[in-house]
Length: 554
Image 1 (cartoon, rainbow, N blue to C red):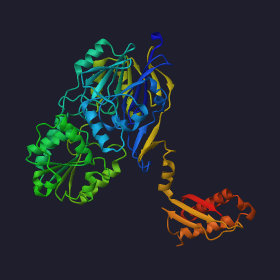
Image 2 (image 1 turned 45 degrees about the vertical axis):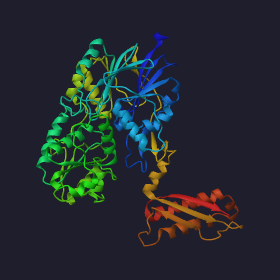
Image 3 (image 1 turned 90 degrees about the horizontal axis):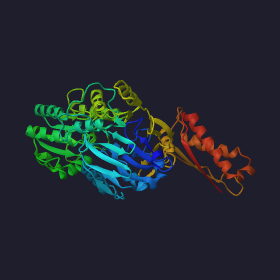
Image 4 (image 1 turned 90 degrees about the vertical axis):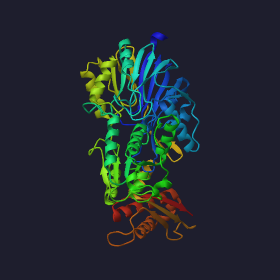
């Protein structure tokens, strides 16, 4: 049996895209593989998914083999790595290994979301080794933009694979420990079969600045500011939150926190000791008693979220807190692609209110948590893998890292995308199968496909509205009265000033009249004729075809 065993890697999310990371490792003969899941993330909907709350990976491939799923391992608590866990765990029903910070955030989220499942969590810490099915897993500390990120050294009889997760090499992080170079080197000496490596910054040369350098820059900006300072950042970046709080303290200012997700993260970080040594945060009720020059506000909304604290401040909708002309707003974050317009709208509103805006282009107020090319080369040097596999990125990032791996001397480089099954051993790395993959959607309390959630129709509704028509026929199959018509999201009048509703009612009447009376007994025929006529009338007058629902009764 052992001589037929294969080690395979199958990404169902996060390879060919940013976010929604979900990876499978399988070991055993093809007809009896045992599996683990590494990370279980989400991505966020764009304007083409109206009403959708979250985008989740389609996991039906592993759902069909749950008897062989041995566990789920989470590398860190960013939403794109653990954010789907509460929604997908009822389908997976496997034990979950997490660090204390990730487990704390999961529990805080569970308590805030009614009906969420109680996931069986086993705590592990960086530096520890544990076993899940046939996989021996070592958690190696790395630096990233969240507490307790780890890379995983996953060992089977086929060899050791390093799954980096999200990482960088930061010589001076705000929250330790450092990336464990010695352990990566030791693994490289012992022999690494494959390096499954983060590609997010593979197109950028050099090395990322340190988190402490950002803290020093923020300190000077806060010290030099004349009025209040508001800083928006990613809620999960505890090191950055700590840097801002330290800068405020050193400048003699009080710190106030706005936003539910920030408060939830700070609560968990405080319990684990990551906020030790900082003054207590001010309460919102104290805002009116703190002089402008003595206040720093840390707030949610760095990505332009319309209901987050910064957006509300820009619309002057906060009950107890406001910003005024002369205050400074610092965007201590990067713009996630797709959010540019929403962020720009908030910046313009703040500028109209007289705020000074500082962003990454103006000063060192943010650094990425991902490795640039010089850092990637160092990881290759440390681990010396036989196979390099770029993951966590769009096509440009994956190809850039694949080229870097090849020119750095990694013997085999495997380019793959979501749904590809990559055999790592035995033999050379090879894509041996394609498995089902895709996206499913969290929409209110339900999760399902685009069709099941009605998203395609909703998209059409957002473009051209909806018309409901009620047609009543009498015993002789004549119209009992003019059809009732309700239009939502449809233009009111045409270019000549005529009401569209009147035009559509006339079209409905004409459609019924055009059908011979004997054929009107086929109510489905009447329904379809009216639907087509109403859509055509709207299109003639408006240039758009609304969704039309017709009810025919007698």
